[in-house]
Structures are given as C-alpha cells and as structure tokens.
Length: 89
Image 1 (cartoon, rainbow, N blue to C red):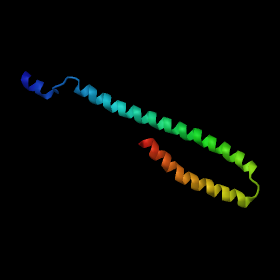
Image 2: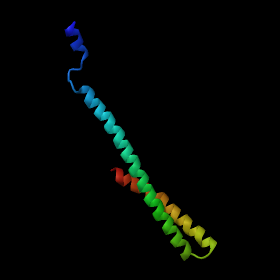
Image 3: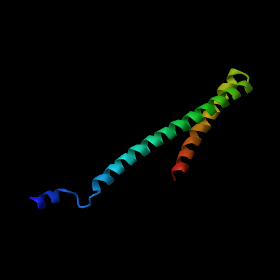
Image 4: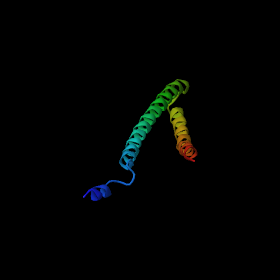
C-alpha cells in the first residue's frame, strides 16, 4: 500500500511549489505591467493636455486650429505604430 501512495506523488518533490510559483509570478508580472502602463498613459495624457493648452494659446483662428489638429493627428497616426514596432523589436 505504501508503494502505491508514493507513485501518486510527483517525482520531484517541489514540482507543485514551482508550478505555484510560476502562476503567482505570472499574476504579479501582469499586475505590475498593468500598473506601469496606466502610469505611463497618465503621464503622457498630462503632457499632451499641457501641450494642447499651450498650443491653443499660440494659434489664432478656428480653421488654423483644425488644420494644425489634423496635421498633428496624422503625424501621431504614423508615429505611434512606428514607436510600438521599434519598442517590440
């Protein structure tokens, strides 16, 4: 009966502990990554708000603001994918 009970245990006595450590590690890294991403988005959001407020005072006329906004939007549309591509490779 004892031999049968031993066969149910994993060969490595720490197999369960390492599996649990991997699971907890993945969860903690996921939480840390989400928190870091939220902080970066918050910082960039504040920077963009300040730049937008500063730029708003420098540009006169509604049409000019629309044109500048469109140009900045198209630039961001092309630059952000490039930044993401370069940061992943």
